[in-house]
Length: 147
Image (tube, rainbow, N blue to C red; front, side, top):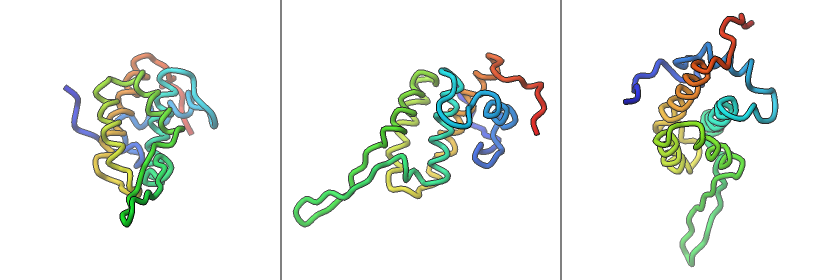
């Protein structure tokens, strides 16, 4: 069973594996473009999704437009293809249930500027899982002193 106790949010620089997360970003994630295929790119993907959530309220993740049906109008949403590719990429690098929870949670955030609603939990659980794998696979040099 998954651990449901969280130290804090990576967005607040207080994640469960914060020190290793910061090292992973220094050592595995390029300043621009994609990271190496596998766990480094999975970490970049969920972190990009988290960035848009915390920084923009998913205003970039969701494309929104008004539809009109007679006198009624309503909003339609589609996920931006860039973010859809990031979400799809995660399907191959996190447990199926984590990916399912992410995909079920994202549509609840379609109205934008909706921080909270379980986002810390969903995003941080995935980051924790990826970081555990990065640490286990020794993909980062934890002896390196960072500035």
